[in-house]
Image (cartoon, rainbow, N blue to C red; front, side, top):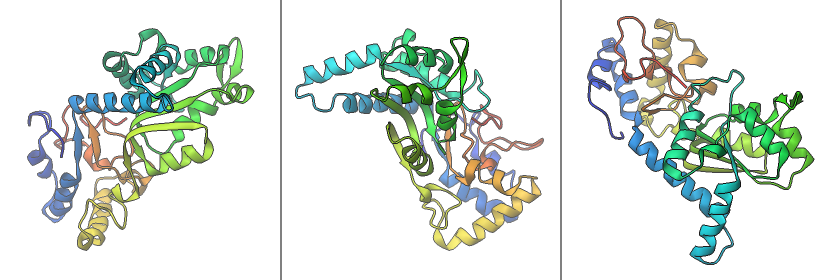
Length: 284
């Protein structure tokens, strides 16, 4: 599903031939569930997400002119940053999404900040803040970003501590894909955070669900057994087989597959033809 690139980049026939005959059926189910978003589709999702953010910001304004003014005021004053995990990296996909926000949605480069810089600006003003990402998976990444202290004015502080000193400000999490677990976790832990997303994925979007909408119900018991058998054969442990938190997603992007995706999509041992050769086993 999705707009697939040339076969030199995404070749399902070669990928299916990786699987021994007894596992070919589950490979077909995996391929049928695979949802690929190229950069053009991601661009449309990013524009749509910012349109939804603008609508949310301007709620209560009566005319188009008033709504536009409210959005422009917000866009010109807000801090835009990204959630980071416990091991921040320059390759974090949040930076990629921030660049798209700049190029597609008119967010000024000066308003786009790494979390450590954003923390300083957050402490010095009452500006609203928007965390931008492609996936809200389990909510753990935002939890880390919000609560873990980092260097600040010669000492350490956190977004959480600064917010508690002045709760009269707006916090947004803008993402393209939001999984049920991540939304629920974030809303329970941080009810003041407004989550903006384009696609919501519930537990039945998981390939590991007893009621997965991607696998025929009659095939589900055999599918799970065969998946776990193949995982053992390939040296992939149970938890790793189904992705982070066993969310077992089938979504892939042109630039990455999320760590909540089923590992077989990105698994690429010696002699194995990658499904997405642009990634060659790369995960977010």
